[in-house]
Length: 88
Image (cartoon, rainbow, N blue to C red; front, side, top):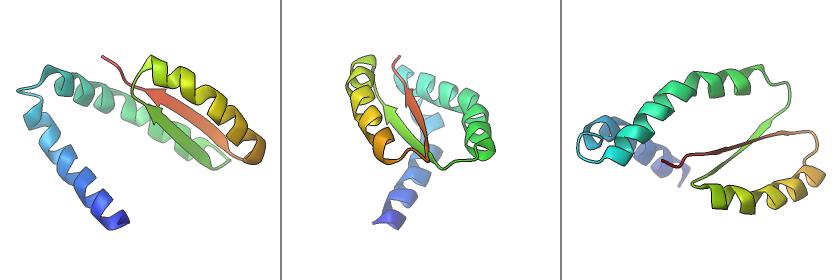
């Protein structure tokens, strides 16, 4: 299942610039992803602890996930949590 997921992600990444020509939201998503990728990679590579990255699609989902992450922190206190969201 992991290999199928990774393969589909690769296909989506290849199609994303093309799809952005027709769908403005995907164009914005692609541009923001490209702009922020180096900062995320730097954060993950320089962090001493394992990183648990939680991505949500809206501010409302962010507000819902914060209490969940707080509970996870109680059990995974040796990890760093990164919460991100994208909403155009």
